[in-house]
Length: 364
Image 1 (cartoon, rainbow, N blue to C red):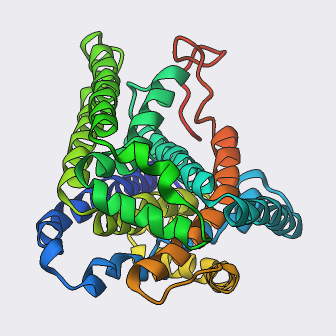
Image 2: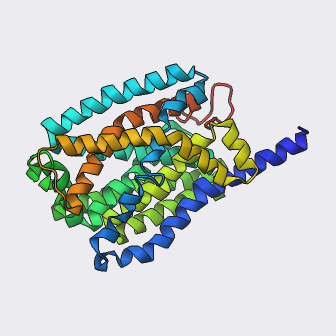
Image 3: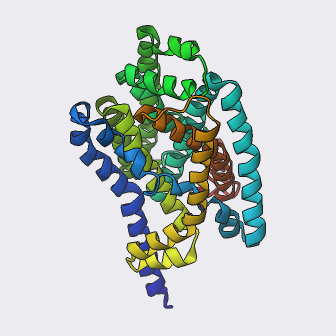
C-alpha cells in the first residue's frame, strides 16, 4: 500500500471512529430528551424499554468480548486469554454476589461507586483517544475528568429525581430482604443540596482547568469544546429525563457504544472494515464475538432471580434482578478495563503531561 493510501485509510478510520464514538452517542441522547420529558405520562413498559433493549443492544453485550481483550491487546494465546478472564469473572463476580446476599445496602453503595469509576474511565478514554483531547495532560486532570464524567449519571439523578432514585435503591436492597433505611440520609434535602453544590463546583473546576490549558496554548480548543458541551449536556440530560429512562438510554447509546468502538479498534479486521466505511460488517462481527458471553450473562440474571430471597414480578422487581446481575458482572469487567487502561497508557502521563521522552502520551 502506498503512503498516500495508508494516510487516506488512517483518516477514514479516524473519521469513522469519531462519528461512532463521539458524535453518535451525543446525537442519540439529544434526540431522547424530548421523549424523556414525556416519560412520566408513558406506560411503565415504555419507560423500562431501554433496559430491556440493552440485553441485546450494546448494553449487556459491551462487556461480552472481555475474554478476547488480552489476546487482541497483548498478543496472549487465545486459550490463556479466555482462561484468565473467566477466572477474574469467577472470583470477583462470585465474591460480589455473596456481598449482595450478606449486606445488600452496602453492596448497593459499592455498585454506585464501581459504576461511577467505570463510566468515568470509559469517558476519559473516549476523550483522549476518540476526541483527541489535549487538555487532559496530567494524571490529576484525567482523574478529575473521571470523577466528573462518572458522577454525572450517578449523582445528578439524585439531585433531580430523588424519589425515583430511592425506589430503585429500595428495590435492589429489598431484593435480598435488606434494610434500605441506612441509605435514607442520602435523600434528604440537605444532602442533595450538598451534592448539587459540591459536584457542581467539581464540574466547573474540571472545565476551568481545561480552559486554562487552551488559553495558554497548551491544548486545542475544539476537543475542549466537545468535552464542555458533553458535560453541560449530560448535566441537563440527567436533570430533565427521569432516571430509569435516562440511565437505560445512556447505558446503551453512550457508555456501551463508546466501549464497543474501543474494542473494535483492537481488531485488525474491524479497523479495516471501518476504514472502508463498513460499519454494518463491523457490528455484525462484534455481535458474533459477543454472543456466547452474552448468553452466559443471561444465565447470571437467571441465577440472581433464583437466589434472591424476594424476587418480584413487577417492573421494578425485574429491573432490580437485572441491575444486580449487571453489578455482579461489572466488577470483573472493571478489572479488565483497568488492565486495558494500563496497557494503552491512559494514565501514563507525568506531572507536566509528558512521557519520559518528552512527547505527549495518548492511548495507543
